[in-house]
Structure formats: structure tokens, C-alpha cells
Image (cartoon, rainbow, N blue to C red; front, top):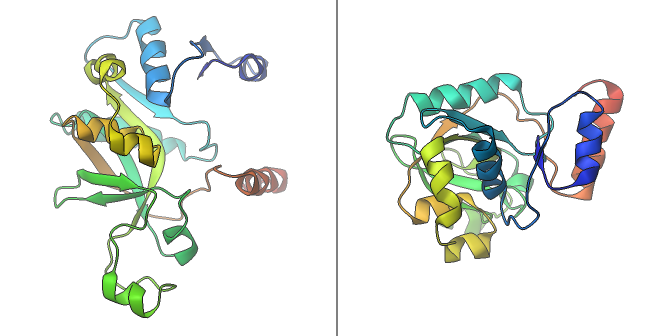
Length: 209
């Protein structure tokens, strides 16, 4: 676990988990991961998978799948995952990040907005998602190549990154490719709001997490 917070270090260390303490000035998780990976002295051919702390219920198999996906796409610097959105509440929630893909499964753009926007359908009934709309929720899960991680902190932050508050847009802005897996099944809930946190705590208490 990479963190700059002593409370996090104490909590995870109590469970015997290795902790890498990082600087407090990092603006993004990728910057923090780059420091941690550098401290570990990982080789250039290493693939580093970053599971963000706000995705506590992520399926372990998906972590392995991200590493395999990146290994299978040598032209990509990053691999990540998404899931089709069927719930209008998710579609119009800015805390749910969306991704638009190209024909080969590479990311074109990430946004907190509802993209792609179904102009006619949403104008007629903004609460329904029309059939066939490729609307995907992005997971907070990334696999990186080490050369990209080393380069990332020196990349100029992108204007779109600052406005959207999405660090992966820095990679797209500078021409790096992101390959995206479309997963099946119902995604586990992430933690973006206090309400999300209570929902996850309830799942843990019920033993259904």
C-alpha cells in the first residue's frame, strides 16, 4: 500500500501488509504510484497494477486481467477496465466516470459528463438510456508499464485533466494509448461519497462484500 497518511500506514500495518510511505505533495495517485514503484526498483519490463483505495470490493481476478491485457497490447502504456451502464442514475452522476472507446478498444476520452450523449433520446426522455448506446462506467483500476510511470510525473498536466479532475486524461493529452477491457457482470460499488461509504460498510457487515 502506497500512502502519505500515517493513519493508513497504521491500519494496514496492523494486518501485516507492506506499506510504502510517499511524499505528501502528490496531486494524483499515479504520481504517488510512480514514487512507490521507483523505491521498489522495478525493472523496465515490469507491469504495475494500481488498485485505488476507493474501490475496496474490486474482484481480484480483474487485477490479473489488467496485467494480462497490457502485456497483450505492446502499443499501450496503460490498461484499464469499464462496464456497460444500464442505470440512468449512474449515467447522469458526475461521480461515475465514463469512457468512450474506439473500434479497437482504446480509450478516446474519459469524462464525468454523460458521454456519448444520445442527442435525440435524451432530448425526448432524459431518464432513459436508449438501446445500443455505448455508455461505459470506468473502473478505478490501472495497469502501467514502468517506462510510462517514470515519465508521468514530468508530464505537463493537461487542461482537460484539471477541469475533469481525471489524471488519466494527462496520458491521452500527451499521446499515450490506454487499452480498455469491457467487463461482464455487475460491478462492485466504489466509494466516491459518504453515502457510498455507508453502502460498502453495510455490505461488509452483512458478509456480502
